[in-house]
Length: 399
Image 1 (cartoon, one colour):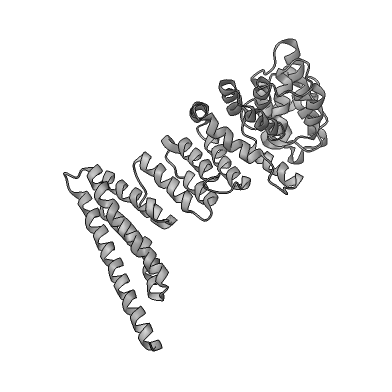
Image 2: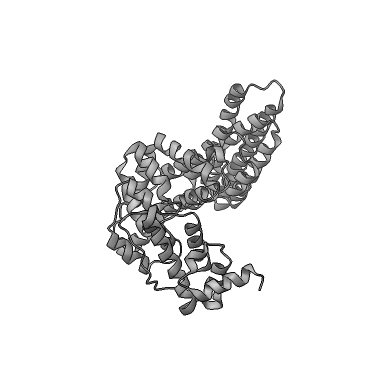
């Protein structure tokens, strides 16, 4: 057989394969369009759609094996063709059937998902799972998808994301899993009062899945450096006001491990008080030392805990200047009279003195002075600081 004849035979065979592929695509389109009928029965519609999509998948695999450039061009357009078919179905429940059946068989891309996003929550979760199972970089995809996930299914989707980043789907990569934890943190930072109780309730009901994911993240990867593990643990540090009630309901040991990380990176309301309720307690000396080293939100949390906890004192030695938001937070603590009895009164005065003393030593732009003078704090707090007291009287008189 000559080379030319061999090529002609191969080409003819490919033409038959490509013609069959196009016919399969048309068959899918025809069945999909029946989803717009008023009397469509979704169960029957799904049964009709499955076989034609199976045929299309088989035809797709045949074209890929043939190895012709024209074939790869057809395959490159497949995602777009499938999206066009799904869009043709205006009946939303029927369209969800089309989308779910397509994603079960084909590795869809982000463009398809944006163009043909499922409306039904169950379908959207199923599509999300299929996408992650087939994705080359499921961690990045999961994080992007979680950012647009409807509130009603955010928590189920989060667990689906964790599940698909672990065996048997994928080899565990803690950094990819931690990226999903960032999405949980972001989610709880907004509408916290509404979302946090829902998060506790949902994760308590699915504690085995959530604990498995946390353990997978916490377990050091082979060859991981101590510094790399430390950074990872800091990223895992969830807000204690979420961990504490979840631990109270489940007693899952991994939550205590996560709580230990939150000692270094506290967040949310009363972090050290919540950690104390989990049995994660540090000495008064440890807190005193940490106050001197801490900055920003951690410093606020440490001083707040000292104000409200008998036997814990404020450390006036600050190694770095107070940020403006820290001063505002300390003023708020004093106004709310955090700390009980005479001990609380004494500590609040000490906190005020700490800020007032910085006015003369470390107050770029006199921001602390301005905030204290405009604070409407009780005048008795200013008695040891006559210049500040004079400024408050001048402000009251409009001078």
